[in-house]
Image 1: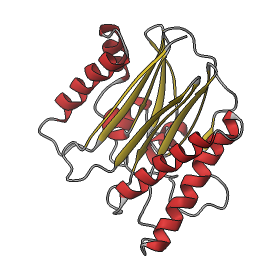
Image 2: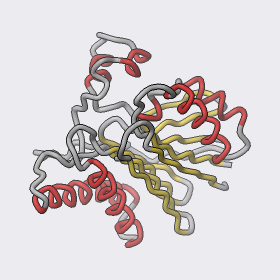
Image 3: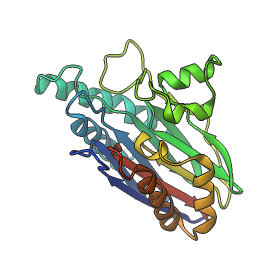
Length: 244
């Protein structure tokens, strides 16, 4: 199958863009990642860019299995950010979310921490998405609120797990087994500044209008910008991956 992909990031209404993303390809291997540095803690832009730069170095080394490399992406990003905290006297003030989609020889495997999401759509329908490590997602799990309430919940920015805090054990999640995408399956990786301003149904509507990954991304971007107009909206970042 052919794989098309596109990515973008914008600072929205904020003075600094603390999001980072990366799209890597070597023969039949691909890696896509979105990282959202935590605003309000300072130096979030350094945290997110450190994560994506770390992933690029590991990807280019081509060592290990697909699952091995995913684990190393998160573990080495954590190590690099904690080291930078020490070097810059920024302990606890340099953090980021991280979502990574790896595709090797037609098999997809993913991992994430925080609330930057990975979505999968099949046959113009929602198929699955990663679950946020956040207070609102926890409230959904215990039945306090509904899934649709996450986007506008007052605690939507309270994260339970991120890179840049000390772990007793790894807090990121890796999918249990690889997934074999079908033709016309579509993936979306995005920061919360993106998914907060577009409903799942609108993501699908935009995909129906599009002929490729770039058009799909551009259609969704229009929705995000329109909904964020007049507000001090967050940085927003997204990557689309389309199996043809």
